[in-house]
Length: 294
Image (cartoon, rainbow, N blue to C red; front, side, top):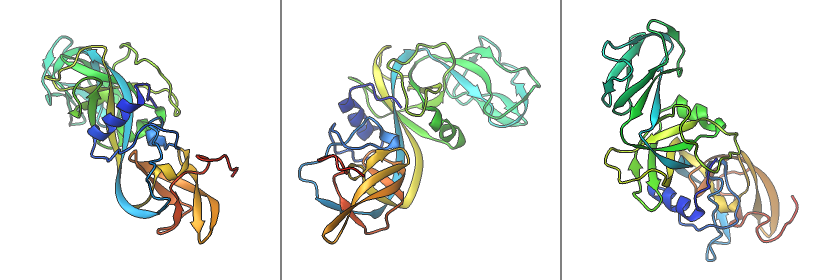
């Protein structure tokens, strides 16, 4: 997962991309899988303890990227079946946003944004599988190119997601179309991902976006939405990915407890196991003040 852009900008971008209250600064607290690198500091006047409580939560994946001019994006098959291109679709042909460029077993295949067809990747009449690239289109504007960790790919392909982009020193909260990027484009600098390096996606920016090539930016991708789940502040949990440790307080005693984690919105994290509603824990994760062994 990429957070090579300065941490302060990533946190600011996250607060703009989606309605998440990121009232935090860069610090040394534990981080969760969805927000790794955008670390949250312990607020000096924060409550000493917090209780496990229920709330609605939307998970946001934030990726760093770089602005590319006239990027080439991929249109993939919406289903498995026989591919047929529209009569007016050929290499060099112009397409409009939302235009039907073909069908797969009578399911329309549409252009994500306006552009010029660069390459046809499937033979007319060929049987194709869902998600197989069918053609590439060169977009006439700009796109934010970012690399997606491999452990997040199924989530991007399996359900509709929304995305917003913020450009460093530029506009923020830009709605953008998220689509796989064609190969051989300019690589995003400062690679690396805990989930393994994955393919690149484009966040196609609006045609009137005031950007220039080479600028850095962040794209926020809304993933899971869950109502009424058990949560704790991320500052209370030490760990990452799907497991962590908290300091549970019961009366006058404190016990280190293993917890299972779910989604995060950058401020709070879902607790899927190890605690129940109303349990009280320290607002500071184990190990932040001392290195007490678990």
